Image (cartoon, rainbow, N blue to C red; front, side):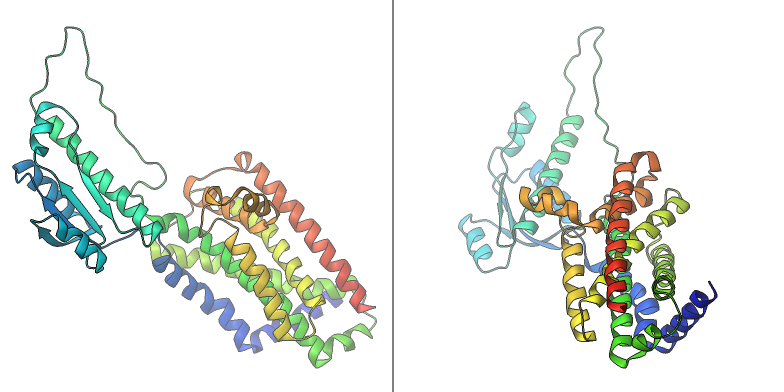
Length: 373
């Protein structure tokens, strides 16, 4: 084990001397968490809205106040002519138009469903769907509030009024960043471990130090252990830094077991290290290694459910995601971080991650040993 220890010392010294690796280890987590945590969001704020009130009653003005007080909408105009709504939306001055026809308050007082027309600019389909959901929610809450404030009908003797109460678990404020930020840790580990491992080994190929190690009495397994263990430690340090930055910047702590998250992270790092070694065995230059590693990282990130829910993908693509280890680690992160889920509920993901790690790392080691002969 002395040879392995000396090799690890050599690798750590080389990592410390490389400014790019140091920046990737310490600066990248902070930048990724801060930028992606604030930029990647499913919320749509400041939606430009124009309002047409054909009823002009206290109820219609109260509904308008609900939209005006919402942080999701910004009222840009009140039109008295219906045709102006289309013109404003065609010119891009408004994204949503709400139309209240005459008889809006009368329908509510009679107990019938009032009619509300919503025109949405669907050039951006995702934003249009989110905006329509906001409008629907505000109108529904207003109608419920108006119904409660009206005189109640007579309830038969012995009857009880049923009231539904909605509660949101794990994310009471429905903030999208609470769901997205834990997933950044998986993206960060993929970037650091795959890039550092592949670039580090390929660089030694280019400068000839790997060939010098091959002619020494050191055994192949000792060389592989001495080359990979330092990057495993580096990946684990990156994970710890990521958790610390998430806590400091966004105040999001781990609801579950830190020990379980550490074990799952080691399994995932084992997989990404194997990918990095595989990339180094098929690359002859650092530029080539960077390109191949970037391809694997893009595939892993897009099909992990980080940006787009897997359930929204086509059936064929959903099948392909099962071959992506980032998918399982992404689920594990969110379950432990937000819900405090234990190992008993993560058996499927843990087994899949362990199988992927064992297979990928073993294949990478076997191929790497062949290059040493």
